[in-house]
Length: 226
Image (cartoon, rainbow, N blue to C red; front, side, top):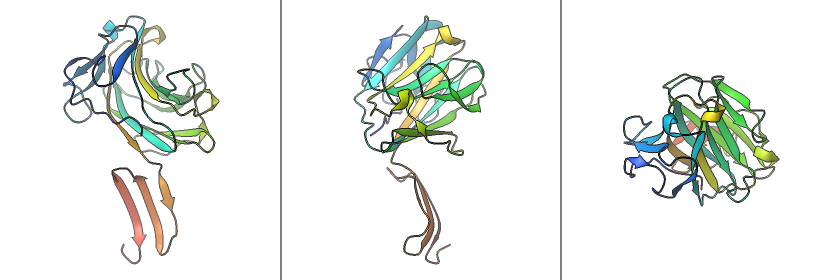
């Protein structure tokens, strides 16, 4: 199961040491739990650029990304030319998985080969929450991405050319890459793959966007029921 986390049960202050989150690099005072800027619920994570040093990141491990599935989360930048990252990968060797960047060029990008050659998903505005979603399939180790329930991009090889069953996510403010303002994360959730059924026993069109928890279902026509 991918990461499911809303941060609401945590105390205000350092993310490091709460739940299963631990400092990976940098200053533990950079990533903070607070209740002022959140996507939903009562709390979210704030990356404080003034406390980041060259860069700071916290990680959570023990997540099960085996099999097919998707990860959803929300992110927001206090400027439109920031440098903040969300990664999923193997904790043991940093292989596989995905990376989503908010870049100093004002774009949200995904990355499939380490630190270079990000692929633009969309531009971003300051102080606006964005819903970010990545879906993967293990049959060929490919992933695809979308923003704010828009059109899915093409299936592409996972970061490093393979999926690699990631077991860790980390959140990072990277001043050396151009971070210049605070950044926020909230509302991580996981789902099973999107399923599209065009014709099965009189069900002419059914699209189930999120199966776990059945968060969203759209059925266009089921045996005369419009």
